[in-house]
Each structure stands twice: as structure tokens, then as C-alpha cells.
Image 1: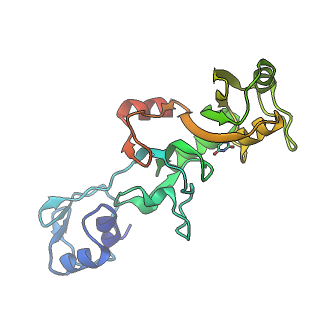
Image 2 (image 1 turned 60 degrees about the vertical axis):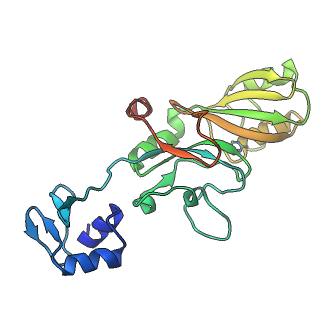
Image 3 (image 1 turned 120 degrees about the vertical axis):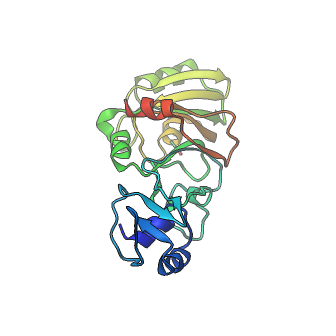
Length: 229
Ligand code: URA
């Protein structure tokens, strides 16, 4: 990676700021002053700016409690995205793993680890996603049986889900697929309508209830280990 990009990605300043420090001889790579912004670095070298080590964070693992009204996209556009919430110097390398609908809230995992993301999104790994669905109408025992058995949707029949009735119109549902609007469509088949959807579990992660909507935090080492298992 170019030295100026490395420095600014690591939070040392804007591209313009780090270029100016570089020009003044304020940056050393492996003990040598480097003034060329285009010099290539791997990140293995000891890189100092004004005598202070500058390090890129390698694996970045974030839990976001997604609020409603923002889309799960990295593309900046008219609509606010989940990435607008995250403050990180390496933000451009980050992406959400999977998508939640604009009105869905809760656990969204954001990372720069493409390999892990690939594993977690691969259908063959049958990664569990747990939702709390609020419904327009009361849910019956028969509804729960259908959810547990598999719901015949237009394009496919869902794999058996875990379904627990939390109250008359609230269900905790764990599915292992992640098709477009899947939970809403599953309840639609049951002639019901989801009025509120919150994701509380994704793979080994459980939504941190202390994390308010719109807040994020880095995963703990244990959470990262569990996720990679
Ligand atoms: N299922 C849905 O219908 N919407 C979501 O956001 C996630 C799962």
C-alpha cells in the first residue's frame, strides 16, 4: 500500500496532512526518513510519524445495534447507511456482513475480514440468525409448527426454524437462511404481518443489550474467537 494511504487509513491525518508531514521529513520507515508519498509499505515495517508509531488495525470486528431508517449498504447516497454511524479511520475497508431491511433493527456485524464474512454468508454453513418479530395478529400453535417444519414460499421452502412464542404477538425465530425479506415472508404465509423486527443473534454473536440503538462497539477477543470457530 502507498505510504500516504497507509498513514491516513491508520488515522494519522488526511491524505493532504500526511503528505505535508512526509515532505518535511517527519516520517520514518524502518528507521529511514521517507519523503515519497508513493513509497510502498506492507505494514510489517516500523512506521513512525513525528516519532509516534502508526499502525493499521488488521482485523476490525464491530457489533452495531442498527437503528431503523438506515440501510445496510456501504454506498453513500440519498439514504443514510449503517456506515454513516461508524467512526473509524479505516472505515472505507469495512462492510456489513449480510443485510437487514431498512426498518429492521438490531445486530449487524461489520468487519474488514473478507474471508470470515464469506464463511458466515455461505449458505452451506447454515449460520443461525435469531430475530424477535412483533406481529399484527396472535400466533397460534399451528403457526409455530409450520415455522418449525418449513414454510413453502413462492421460490423455496424454508429450512426448519426454531420458533418460540414469547407473547401472543411476539415470536423469537431462528433461521439458517438469509433470503430477501425472509422473516416477513414467512409470517406473510401465515396470514400475519411483521410490525417490528429486531435481530438479536447472528452466528455466535448475541446482541449486547447494553448497546443502545445506533451504537456500536468492537467485539471482544472471545467474541471474535467464537465467531471464527
Ligand atoms: N427477514 C426480514 O424479513 N427482514 C430482515 O431485515 C431480516 C430478515
